[in-house]
Image 1 (spheres, helix red, strand yellow):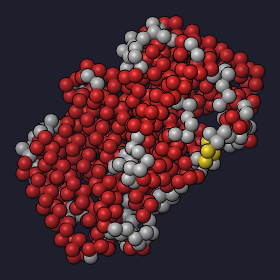
Image 2 (image 1 turned 180 degrees about the horizontal axis):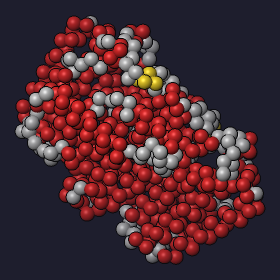
Image 3 (image 1 turned 45 degrees about the vertical axis):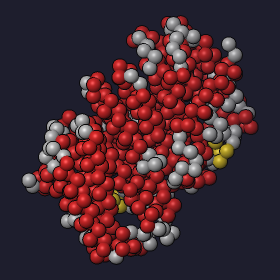
Image 4 (image 1 turned 90 degrees about the vertical axis):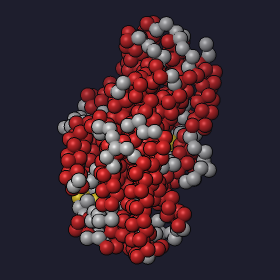
Length: 297
Length: 297
């Protein structure tokens, strides 16, 4: 299996579905729909929706049916980026080489564009829930609950709150772990588990998915920190070394470069190991987590 | 029936449920849960949840069962107030006589507190959906979808976007109507319709609720504009005359004081008229809309 063509195929599928699920840019009020589209189609890797679809395949299910759920996850991810970039938060002017939402549309509209996307995600999830058979509604309700938990004050928002309050302070390892597990890990976990839950995974299978997901999230964060040191700023679309300049606590700053690389490899191995309990095509999930070790963006 | 004791009883019920549904203030990360609680328990009138419960009663159903849904509506309302007050939006320092969220916790945390509340609302709705019998799950899914639509880019967020972009500009009547219908009207409508949908209202009954709701929303907005002129700033907890100072287009600015008062009375009558199609105890809904004509806050 070739990961590149798998990613390309799925990005196209997700982008097409996103365009259909979001109001068109010229829908009134135009300003908000333009702002939403601007960030939604700014070249995201669509990692969370692809993980969701790949999880259905790892059980042996057809992933096409759950595309709306995958799209909802990307909407939540995009809302979080818009709000994180705000001057009152990380104050970033560029993301993926493009001006951030508030730089183009102003802070007020950027706040509202994030709000709109978060809300739209739940509208899409509920519409999907209405479209499935009655016997499958429980699983969708479970997924809505799981995604909300992963995104809320004890999930992604919680992680971002601690990150915000830690800026310029020296934090310990436990705090760093909390931030990563919640700010980025929680939504990866929910993306993978959602695909599994909607594919009627057994309790044991769901456990395997969770192990995979938690290690995926950790490997993502370690390699993200490494990229900020050894990455190529042109490919990344943002300057490297910003963590160092902002005195951010990262894996390399705690463990050093070599140990961090070793940790990344170990974590990926653990994720792959968990996949052997799954009955379907686990090749995409395997290649996706291994790809983190080679990522350039 | 005495409206005052009806309101007091219901406010107590809702406040108690809200305290149980939200993470305790000392839950980690404390800063975000403190910020959420600060705005959630800042003396809100709980109008939206009370309308939701009163709608169940107007069908003849026990309203206790749907308290979580009522609370979710108040969470969404509170999130919208926190974000609306931000410097990049209405830039308000006070609300209900207390400092606004960002004045106490800073802008970054205020954005996150709003995000947390919006997300929590959907978590509560999905938990409620998991708790009901399978045959009732469809109605809950419908309500989640309706509330998300009412809150999103073609509902509340849409209204706020147009309001934001209209600041300092002279707007026409159609734009004013759009702002009100979406910024405040949509969530009132969803609150009332949610109570009805969860009480198995028939198509005709739901239509009557919708007529009531749309007129309630309109009467609320007209009387809100009137209060800014003839209200008591101490009771309101904010200065009066701010619309005039901010050159905001309001009902009195378009129609004059007398015609606006007359419109409020007419609108309330239309709302009351719609109630005669409903089989349950419609007295609370009647008194609630009539109360708008006497409101002081």
